[in-house]
Length: 230
Image (cartoon, rainbow, N blue to C red; front, side, top):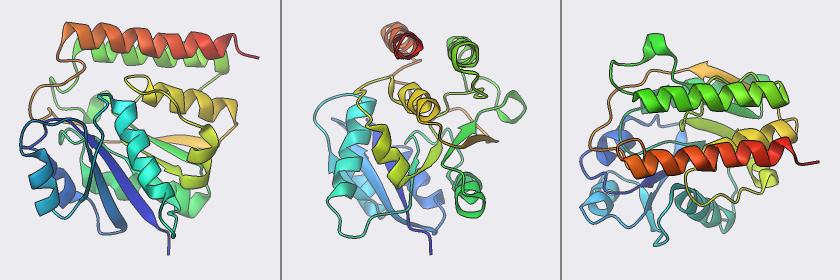
């Protein structure tokens, strides 16, 4: 039986987090919500929905993901697969099964949920998100021959392969770092088209000018860093 754990970074997602947890298929043996300095009822609602809740006081998406990984590393029984999922209910958590199937059945190392236009609800991605994804994946194709079309946060990866990536980004560069390091380490990967809807609440990245600019610089920084790295 494949052991699957889910890591959900969460900052002020009280209105959505219980829905996310509730819709995660039962094949996931543990759902780990990492509270990243929430000032609302995110923690209470996540606990009531049955999740393990951790707290990371350093603010940043990568910080939260690393906290979840550290928690798992302390457990005696390690998982086979880690799934990363946002807490805003913009993804469809029930599609987790689609993401882990290629890993379980076809020995794929890494699967990214691609938010293809045909399956996206209108307005669910801002124009800057769409352009940023296009630019980042175009550059990865240009420099590395990558086949990625999205930096989607809904993704699954073999636990041992995740550890080998030695992830380090603490903020907005987490997703692109994972994809770049997967390319560098020649992991097998595919994208699976997933549905995407308007999130509950305001985005902490694309919903602000500062967040959008900072995320853009972080993503491009990682790409150019790896482009010139031996």
